[in-house]
Image (cartoon, rainbow, N blue to C red; front, side, top):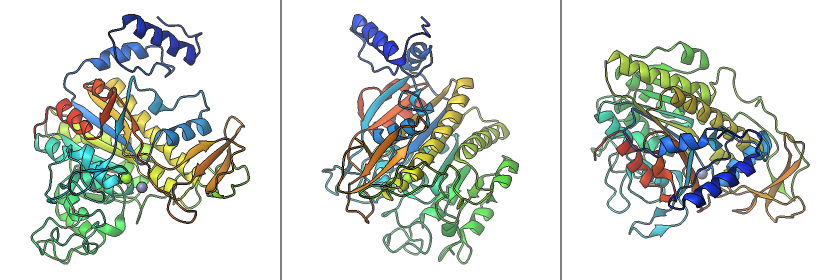
Length: 459
Ligand code: MG
Ligand code: ZN
């Protein structure tokens, strides 16, 4: 079975031939991962069954072009990222809906997150509430928590940003991040009898592990109710949270009590820097792989991911629970650097996210009862174009680790404006119990059902 002398392309052809020969098998098997046992992994992954744990990794704005760009730059055109190594790969559609339920072909992270977190599509900007009636819909994290799973959410954005927000809060608009940000959510305020801002809801939910940025939201003062006059951080401490703010504290913190890690005032500063794309292009550039603007003591996403897993395991051990955990890990600034047409920032964040994928897969290798899913919430603007192309918008030429030039184009909005999401389908890849359900072309909302059934949850 093992033919190490075959090139990945040749190996893929061999598998394709085998699939044609079997002719009844209509599955897409990613067999070019370099691992000789990919087909065995795939066979195992196609079995259903229950998962003890689920690790869901979301690359925000990480469409196929973002993955390809990071691959080309860091490991080469024929190299493979860790996220390329899952045995089962499919595609899913990400569209959101208008208030009347008709499709809105380009989603934002709030509506798409609500889709995978609740199984219900909503309008852009909405956090886990219905599109028309604006009613809260139970989330996968809430259901998991109710059934006794430990729960966690890790992000490079603010913890109150749309992607983490969809798991442990319900808001009319994604902007309602802290108690002072409630203008667009009149019925969600505590004064109006609502659940309060995204920050307040997140800590009220007692999610076991919350790691990311957004300290400024938690430093805002609660305006009404039981915690009036306290900051949300003080409220979190009252609720039993250990609050940490840097790498050293992250390493030292012990399980047993919930952990709130706030590692930056806003978004966690990006890993890499370089010249942003420009009208007419840039000189060929290499990326700077250490951002001087990233404060020492800012934990890497991969370290947050592995600590989150340890803390969640510790929680279950301390409470003698037979259940495992649900953990979401977001690479948020792939999207944000795409918006800013900054290819180096974008690639560095994709590479950082990929290292978190590696942590998750290494855990699953030792704990095969773990479902690991890696996907995006929507596609984005960057495109790899020919070197002699003269795109009218923003572009930049990079010199890859292979020593070749690569031109990347950002033209989904006028230069100077924020570049935009796109409406194309994105990759979803998985391994472990129920992983086969990502095969073929599915809908983003199907991911909710996959995780729900893997953990044996009921809505
Ligand atoms: Mg996000
Ligand atoms: Zn975005």
